[in-house]
Length: 81
Image (cartoon, rainbow, N blue to C red):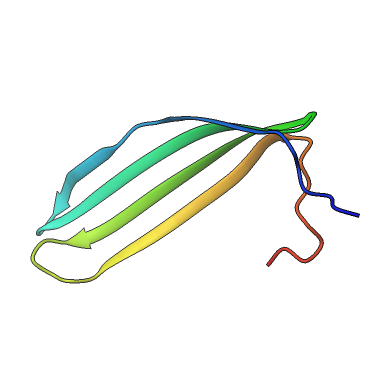
């Protein structure tokens, strides 16, 4: 039996806040998103934020992704990692 959703719709609203100066060449990038996902007759509303903290002229940065289900009928797979 195949449990794959046959109809999928995805709509996203996002914005970007880049190069926010903090101190001593340290910057912050922030990208909040709100998205609506429909799979067959199930739907969900989610938020996700991408946060980057970095230093100018330095090759590495610290990045975080925060994801939260606001309201959803869609459940993850049992083997979701």
